[in-house]
Image 1 (cartoon, rainbow, N blue to C red):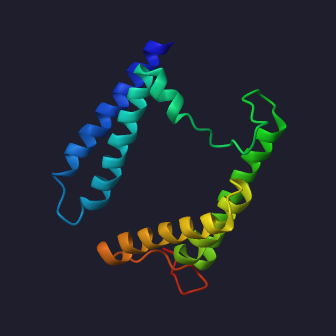
Image 2: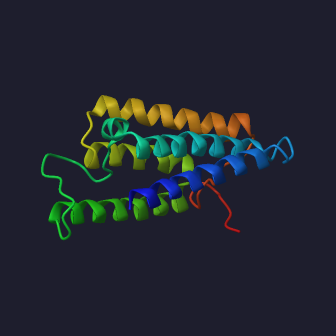
Length: 161
């Protein structure tokens, strides 16, 4: 079973590297986003591949998306895990609804604050700082660097295509 996992991780790593190399054949304005995404993909797939070979690295990087407390369990039918999955699903639908109505620039901070505060149970200062950094990064990346306007939402005059 471990061998299949290593092969899969290696295959993903190779595919991401090939895609990264392919992005250099794109036009200068077309390659920025694929290059950024594939660079992150190389990093994360390399880390995943390393964790396959080193249990020490794997234990240090072990994270659970739905872990919110000491009562975390991987058992099927765990009520807390089911509630967390439901919370994430409802949160995602809420984010999509907010984005449709108010656009990305209004919905990202609201949804991220809500997620960090009520799901991850972070302090208000941590939530505000994290949300601010993410918002500035997204604004700088799309609006300033690429000159690409994000969807403004129906409320603020965004037009559906």
